[in-house]
Amino acid sequence: MFIFENTNPKVILIHLHGFASNVSGSKVELLRKKAKEGRFSFFAMDMEYHKSTTTETLEVLDALVKGFSQKFGEVWLSGSSHGGYVALNYLKFYRPETVTKVFLFAPSYSTLSLTVQEAGGEEGCKGWLEGKEELHIVECETGLELTINREFARDILERGYEILRGNEVDFPRDIPYELYLFHGKQDSVVPVDHSRLFCNEVKVKLCKELHDDHRLSKSFEELLRLYL
Image (tube, rainbow, N blue to C red; front, top):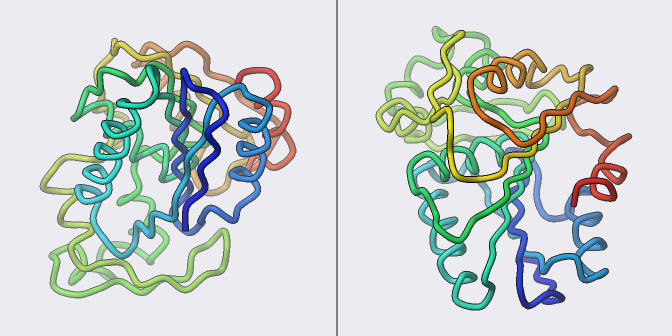
């Protein structure tokens, strides 16, 4: 499923939802509402990250950006949780010329590490980490049962997609995009300390901490009004 609102001929926002989410979520609905006001055109699609690899997802995103760049002069990206992880890796490895702004909502910087932690540690998912078997987990935030592609972990390890490794930030300090980062202080999925570490090492346009949780459900609509 995808959503497309062609309301502004100059700029389009491509949104990347979270790992266990889809385009039926509240963020997509609010972004779509904002697009209908004419601020930007809008596109989002169900990514189903767990069925593929990060490399494959990045290739799809690159095709979308290049395709929409033929129609719109400027491309903005937004990413929620794992969607932010994908967006950051896209900037790092692809360096797209038409992307100017990137909005990150409680982004994950270490999806693999967080998933291993959620699965009970490395011992419980050794076969998955080695690419020998799929991983079955219950996603902590949504309660959904997910089966994650057997190549998902190995792809991240081999390609170096983890942005945060311990206290080390593996991302260019100065990159030619405006980064707007929003993170809830009560986030129990991706610790707000991860964003603090990232913003200490990387040049960002705005880094704002909010009195909210991982979903940013209390503050998201206001963020759109103020910053998008």
